[in-house]
Length: 199
Image (tube, rainbow, N blue to C red; front, top):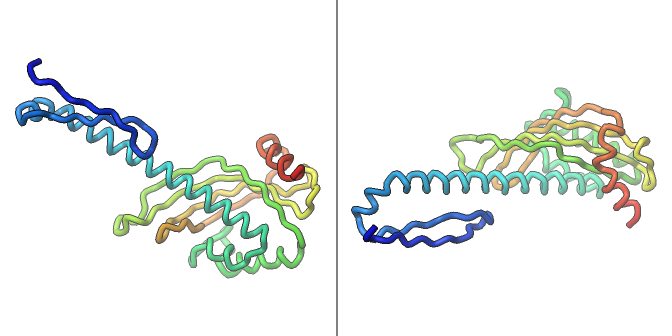
């Protein structure tokens, strides 16, 4: 081939590899139009995957912030993690859920929560706002009011939660939880418990 393609490989911000192809004349650009479409499609998919990964990381961070706020009894910070139209187990709204958590603060001097995220799924949000996204997160939490509680004495809940991102902040839109046997998650959170109790 008389005309040589000049290719350069670079790392994009997601850590994956992309290829930029520079064409030296218009004819060559036309001949490689199909290849260009494939490259553009590939880069678009890469950016979508990166956006999804970023959202999942932000969701994990939001859950950790919520757990920390509960443990530290920061009541306002906990309430702010719930949307104004929050629904919990089909009978709690933002106000009643906030009141329930506050009663736990009064009843227990110490609260410790261990979490295990099972799955996160990012969904399309409101089409009228590019900054709105929806997500589903399933996770387990193990709760204790004793610093040296044995795993079998902890209360464990499986939580199916729906989140929405508003103004770059993830909040819980809906949550349904069910108490399960501690043995169902202990093997997965055992290291968390050991690490915390030995520090």
